[in-house]
Image (tube, rainbow, N blue to C red; front, top):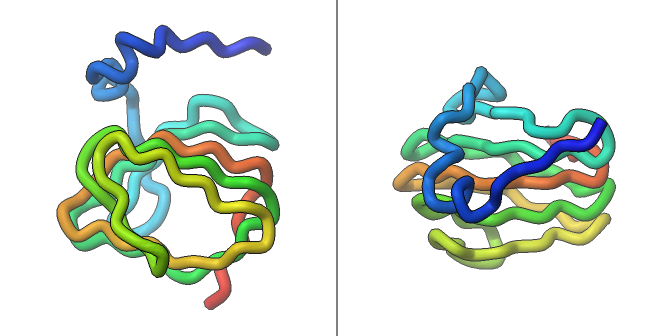
Length: 111
């Protein structure tokens, strides 16, 4: 099944109309494309964290609002971040954020 998104409208706030559901403590998800790869929106509450995890495939993130950080830096609105297969990081969002994220394969939490 083909999924089409009007990107100019989406990036100008159209994503705010999406329906989110629980993903993990402090983080909600709106799944846009399910499977491998998966495309979703993640909405982090202020102070939310995702523990250390390994990427079993390429992960690509576009920060739509707010900011998030990991061991490599702070990523603010408009940042495009890639995490190649085999990389490990943990994620925090002090102010809260919304990201567009694509996983080639699911990540593996290392706790």
